[in-house]
Amino acid sequence: MRLLLTGGGTGGHVYPALAIAEALAGDLALQPLDVLFVGTRGGLESEIVPAAGVRAEFVSAAPLLRTLSPALLRTFFANARGFVQSLGLLHRFKPDLAIATGGYVTFPVIAALRAVRTLRLSRAKIALLEPNAEPGLTNRLLGPLVDEIWTALTPAGAPKTVATGTPVRASFVQPIEPAAARVALGLDPGLTTVVVFGGSQGARSLNDAFVEVAATLAPERQLLLVTGARDYEAVAQRVRGLPRVLALRYLADPRAAYAAADLVVARAGASTLAELAATGTPSLLVPYPHATADHQARNAEVFARAGAARVLADASLTPERLRAELDAALEPATLAALRAGARGRAGVDPRANIVARVNALLRPNYVRP
Image (cartoon, rainbow, N blue to C red; front, side, top):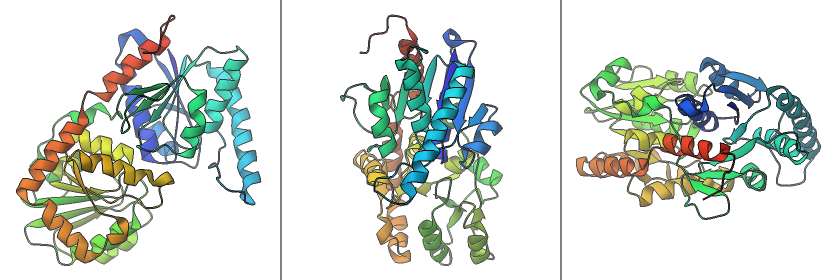
């Protein structure tokens, strides 16, 4: 089976694609499996995908604009070029199935494949993973072009939708002893541990607030700040010399950090939420306030209603409010309830769900349920 994956820009779009490739590689009915990932050279995928051993090619693309502006012409030509480049890729690779996992690069790639299908030059099926509670502009535009939409935080029911969940790599469900994880990260194995993730690109408001909190950290607690590359030098300088505080630029494999954490403080990107559910990790979510259609706030609401997380608005992220939220979340009874809620969000394995959907899509006489 020839599988084309497309997505990019952030880890939240790339890591689910890699998890899908990993899951499909384990299904004997789909072998031999030939995988091609299509992204942009400027996105995080240009590093992550080759490092994972997956073949990658790159096309031109630009974010779709919602208003008229001088940049509109540049956007049009960038995506038109990506459309033409995608036609060439499709001619060479000839996929049996394409799966889009989010990011603006998916628009020219999937539009090109749909055009090729319309001309009866391909019979490839097309699936779209929508892991957020509120789809962005690109996914809304792609909806009519795909055969199935796989959802995670919204119930199935709309045309073409099938609830699958957001897949994570198999290693995330393998248990790691917390004390061993803390030692591996350079932390004290016996202290209550708060891990702060700002996503693949970091989060400045989280970094700034936690630098202030770090100076008055309770003696029984320690703090791991995963800052992102942009803010690392500044944050590392500000926390240098503070006891029980460690700043890291980035974690390509965050499994140890989830295992080490009594509490994770993070944005509410769909991939992060899937990892929190898979690892059963309690969390305090601070949704990114400028996310498209405010989808991170919607994501966080779903987790909060399930008892899997507490939520703090970015606008309320003062050191004083943050200290109070940490004290409340780290109460033993609250932590136990949040952990149970997070595990409850894991549900049926999304990897198995997606393998089943792929096999169904590829059946000659496939009938959508």
